Length: 382
Image (cartoon, rainbow, N blue to C red; front, side, top):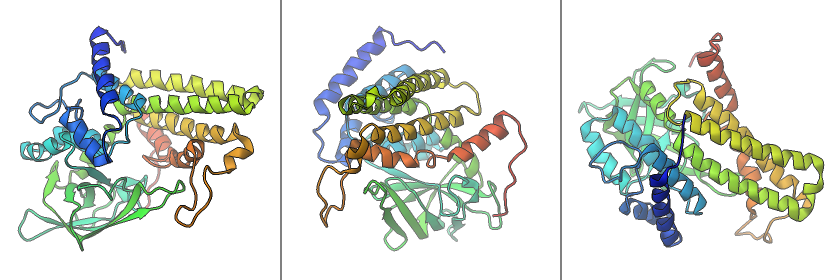
């Protein structure tokens, strides 16, 4: 793929960089920041739909925006699940009524979303979900019952797209439906934050006890097809932005190695060079597949590459600091049991990289079955 940043793209880059420089740091909280982005038209650049409040941008311009956002040290996004996952899914599978109802609030940064996929007994094996949805007598409302887990930002979300089983007795990917569920249902939906190794709680358990849902995307029983379509949107432009963040983390590790003298160790020096070379390789691979290579294994290969790379970087981050990496930046207190510096946070959080978003084992199975044509892995009964 010939991927070139021409003069028109650099002009767009300057616009994005100037806007970010003048607005980053001005928002009081993440929800306010989403509204600020929406008001300026920076949400929904790649939807390919007119009339929903989003500014139009080419694929290259989307890459430019993602790179500049990562470089600007702007706040982590709360609206990326709605913008990058649900919105393209609605464009592909939603009705005109659903697009009109949900796309404008996402583009404005006014409604935040979370993803109700994984369950305690169905993490990477999504087809094993047990959450059920029963149609009410009115014929248009569903009553959703079950438990979701590792639900990112559920404690902040206004809505959740939920994969549920609507056909009694169905197994695996049959009988599933993609539902849009409002989160503000006291007594019917309970969100319990999960405390992580890093001390933060971005993930949650979500308990649905007869929660009401009226919106079905793609038709009843077609949930698996819609869900797989959505998972395809998880890769792409966001991968390149992610790599900008990776490059900054790698730079910090290199600086720490120089400061500690660890850079003089030939083994550590070799590992630093390898991390740099692999990151460059990942970038070119992402650019190669950005326009759609038709390779069924491309998303799985990308996930395997970056997850292992980032985990090794976390290990290297504490290795180059030696014993100092075991000491926190602040004294212990009852209100703040421990604090982490950047390298410690990187090391602990990256332990999950090879699990979330589809574990390494699942990605290798996908490549084996869909690309290499090897026999399908035996699946137990649900």
